[in-house]
Image 1 (cartoon, rainbow, N blue to C red):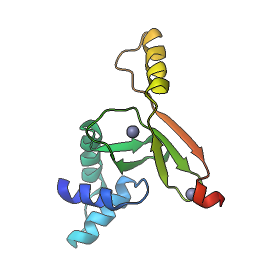
Image 2: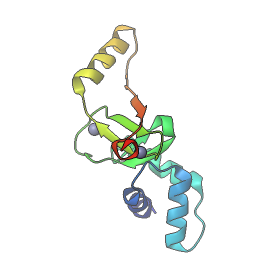
Image 3: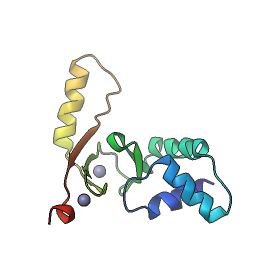
Image 4: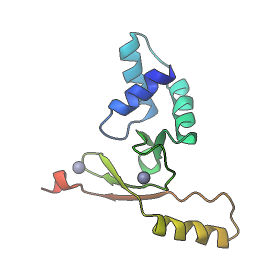
Length: 122
Ligand SMILES: [Zn+2]
Ligand SMILES: [Zn+2]
């Protein structure tokens, strides 16, 4: 099941919801798959750095650099929904420190930019 979920996630060309993934896995297996169990697996992938969650889209993406831990900054297109990401450790590090200075521990920056992608604005 985990392998099927990961394969379905990796095949998406834009952030996919747990429901999208459940449908893709269900189609492959020829039987319905509960979104809840897919959601739990996606959550596990996020915790183990295999996937990223795009909070503002309530969706998931396969992590393109599972070997390193960045606070990825996602850019999401309002038009087509595709997401791209940049890593700027100076920027997210500053946010992290600001959070810690305000007394928070285990600070996890969630930085997302919305806009119109190059293809849609062309
Ligand atoms: Zn990244
Ligand atoms: Zn677009």
